[in-house]
Image (tube, rainbow, N blue to C red; front, side, top):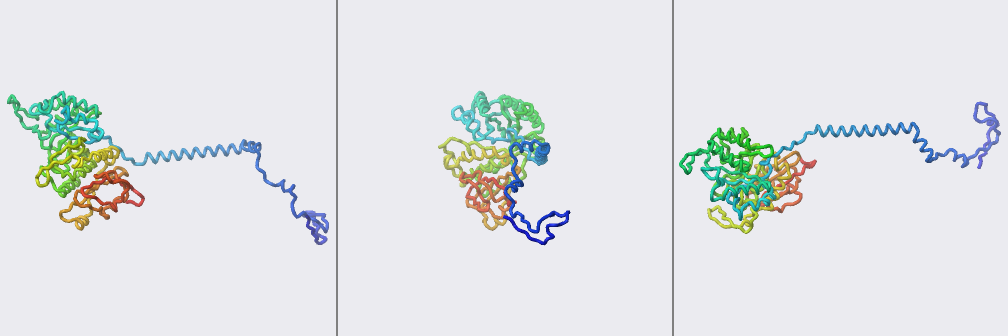
Length: 489
């Protein structure tokens, strides 16, 4: 197909410098370019031979080496930046816990320990499985005036040594409770010789039991009146201590505060490693739920020692036993559990229980709510959660408007505290009263709203929880692991 172009006569006779010269006045020009000419100008991909030739050229090799170098330089820079961030980021230093800071203590009567038929020696593996680490034999194990002898009514020295051997196999330690034995008062021996427990005789007696493998001793704060004798005991403890096996002194606090001589010479002088405090006053009568709550609130608001230890102390109404157990196991320090209250595995046993009116009734251990499963749950949570072992403690009083507007004069308000370690927080909230209580919404706004149940007195709380909708049942304690979100403050 051609196009015929007709122009004036001068069209074909342009100057020599122009493109068209010597053309006729009538000329044909192709309208479409033939396929043969088009194929000469079309781009074609390189074949294998041509590609290998280009890739092996100096330009490609130079580009490739620079690309690889840039990759490794960038990778090294990112690695160095990550290491710098890790090194400079503040980290929580996990404290090294000693044996008396790790596991709960278990207090029991010595006659139960040395009984060959029904003694605790047969239950040592069971106690270890519950997380118990130390047995405290109460103060009748030794007899005055000869502190190097076991009371004849409690067994023999070979039986005691057998108990020590079985405890070592089970990974348990033994401490002797010498509280309220009048150690510093002169005593009259069988040969009418007056001896003083604060003299070298007391020193020799403690040495004797340390040689038997005892890990330490417990004294009352009212017993320690001789600073000189105390210093001698401290030297004796260090003599028998090693890096992996420290022998310790523990003081039981009998009053609201420690006596001045005890505070200045025991705690500050690092001669005493633990101070045992009663969560409830050690009275000989039952307190009401509100009195128990007031006593607990008073203790929780007091400044905590460097490493306290907690025991129940006074008589607790049976309906509050599970709640008090949760508190003992979640407070900072070392929990001390008394035999016959929480972890006795024997079933179908009846004990005498005093009521508020002074009467005595028999109740089975199951009826009293022997919380074996609860104790195991608390012990396992305490063992794996740093916040429950050595985290900080913060008492959380409920809103005062709640106490005045929604609670009457005889009601028992709920209580709560927070255990924190790093970004992990555990909320322990409990209701000691007989009436259910909803958590105050204003109070809960200061905490993350979301969380998950860890355990509860009824072992019936599972899954996630919102503090805004949490309602406490009568005599209930709950442990919640809080979850921080972007919206939480």
